[in-house]
Length: 126
Image (cartoon, rainbow, N blue to C red; front, side, top):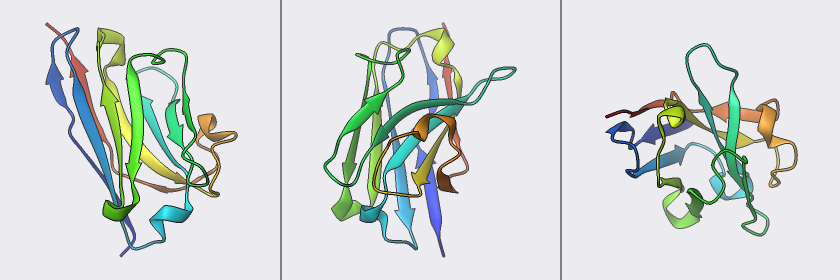
């Protein structure tokens, strides 16, 4: 059964850290670029980060650059999103998704995603 399962969300104080995981099964994980997206209440869906499968290139939204780090472990079929220096505006449901290709070009809108996880809630609040 094809699945992407996110975990690692929770409640954290501003300035804190969380590490999200995206575990994949049921498809050829190491072929696909994997992206992280988020959606906050009343806000547009946002592409946060992406990691290619071709050469491991990484991409970040300006809003998270320097604070978030994406990585992948193909042996474990898992992609991680390390989130540091969290801010209240990072509060959202975070989703991972597999791109249609090994590349991240154009990932930001999510239109290229073919498999999605169910999401994990991240709340940054004091």
